[in-house]
Length: 255
Image (cartoon, rainbow, N blue to C red; front, side):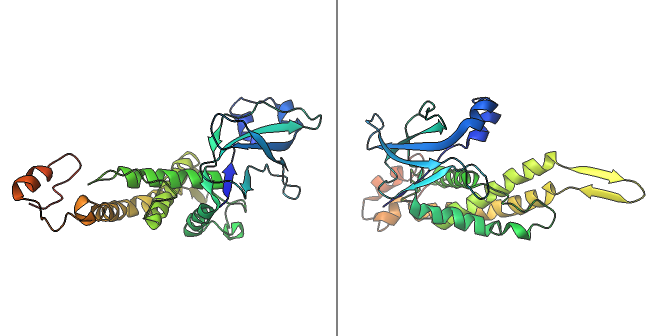
């Protein structure tokens, strides 16, 4: 098993006011540490270049072939003088490499796999990997929190991976629609031009929400207690009746 870890790119830290421009420009490498527990000790795993030598973009992922989803990691930034920044708080690997395929599946469903297809946009991916991973987590939370029974599945054990991906697509389109709402503009000089894409994005996301919610509820019903062996109703009726109306049971016995 391996772990694909992700961290916040340094330029985002600059935008958040956590780095000064001179500190950002001095970063040359990322140092990665790991531990089997959140309290350490942390040993150095690897040192990677801070930027892609070809594209010049900040690198914010690393696959630890000896790690897992429960391995704890820290990262620090290193400058050309060999000085390291303060290490990040301990965090788990985030998602194992097997789940990296889930991110790519979501990107495929969004048709965000070939930036050259964007005729009216800069030819680059519309969603970063970090964004898609967060939308996948939001989809997992939606699945867990939807009744009739509440669950606490993790991304490694959730049985309904396709539903999680569908919810991730919904959240990605919704977020993009909110952003595009701020980018609307109109121009008129004999010929009128209107740039308004948020409505199409909202329609694409909202149009799937009702169906997704029903599909999620139907799926969760399959994991009710009855589906795990109580469906035969061998218990006495006087026992089944009150059990049927317990919180989150949703009258699962149908009586």
